[in-house]
Length: 400
Image (cartoon, rainbow, N blue to C red):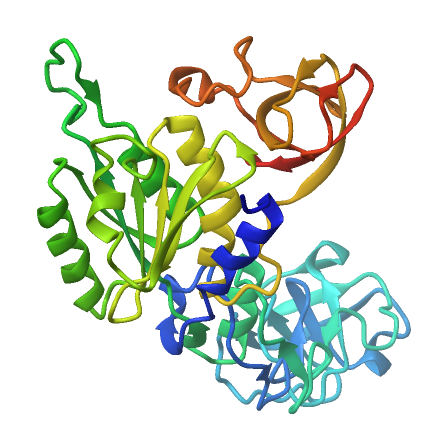
């Protein structure tokens, strides 16, 4: 039986950062930068005003109050190459270029002004309210480092350098296939023995949450030949970067995924010493597409995706750190753990640093309705037979 850490390593090894593409800034949020970005120009590009007010020669306003004629209006964005001669002022808005001759800005609230003349009531300090060209960055300065996840401030920095696109690792497209004759689409009347298909929605949402694009397919009937044909079709599709299936990987007579793929030399099915999620499969299809085959019980699918698939998707995106944020939390309740197997216990935070099982039924693999209460997964090592109140746990935060 493979250990949890061993299987995590094998699952992650199926992934590598995808190629870099130029992407419009509007589509780059959350993607990973594939190159260092330097500025070719000073930022700001020219001296400009930090305030609405009047650009003056400081020597003209050493003795106040003083009245100066206003020779020009300079709104933000003005291309006017104005000059403030001795004994004059320019009315200026925040962001407008400082006119030649001026060396300070007097805020409008420190004046009694108009469009033709202004009374300056306060002598400004040298270079008051003047933003100097290049004080943010000079040509050649490193603005962003390859590997950065592009968040709103990063996009602003890119735009400030004049770039309309970013070179990023492209977003992977992951196909999600749920299997089982018993599954029906949500909203369809359910007869005895049937279940609404929740797994494809769970896993497609998890793929999207990880930063990839989900292609949701299913439910697919328990027909090994038809399933294999679908998987090989996805494998041949160059737009598909990975496949996740749920269900049909255990030892039952109708385990369709295992029946469909057992003869594929690049795919293996192994028991993993973990609860929930013991039956697992993974590998590569003939054209090289990685596939992760997860158990069908919803909590098993959820926990398996979090531990085995999500890190691989994050690696495809180009992230150096692919794990969920982890915290040390104290057990507010105790519970038994399965002998010889690591446990992935869905937990909720009862206080900032204390957790309890998300439901009274613990880590039961079928408890899909109760799974909504989970805020984290407590990873309990295989050598621990019982979690006691007050024990410190390693918890992956699945809800920010």
